[in-house]
Length: 269
Image (tube, rainbow, N blue to C red; front, top):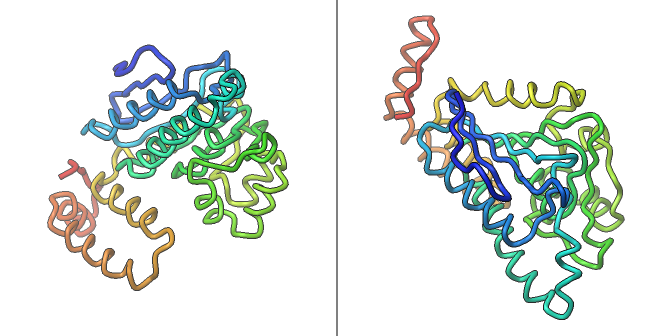
């Protein structure tokens, strides 16, 4: 059974009975190009998942032929002299949405087909926890092509994923990467035939529906919080988190299940 939490607009949100939330970019006629209205709707959908205690994983995808082609260039061009002001607003909403995605307690699986480009598409890929890609998908930064710079946190997330040298090459020379090339660089988790994409993303998300949600959220927070931090800084945070989790019912259930050689049943508390 699927509950339609956001049933219309530029971003749709469904919640399946198994706890999988589906966030879908819904501007297929514009290749899911990002304008202010879509970015505001994306942020609202992410916050809805954040406040949903039944959610265990989130799948992020795009309707139509492409995952997301980045910023809506037609809207940008139509702004004329007002473009800097419009982009300040759009970039602010992209920053807020990207930050919310990274801070989401549940794992985010990007399900990518077609193009993932710009601070929108490429940026969301870099900000997701896992990326399942169709074989024919293409990945591109795209910013310098239109005389702009990358946003959506890409200048940090991409470097973490592929290293400084390769990030410089991707952002400054603007290559179009195939799915296999992106996989080889560490941008993706898995590449599958297009016909298997939805099923594979679903299978990946299902791994987390029976996991301990507090522990999953804590590990995700530690990983993203460690970007740019020192090992010494994170040792204290790891110790605090382990101690905190050890007092939860899920931790006690996990220990009992190991001792009793059975499957644990986590309740998220």
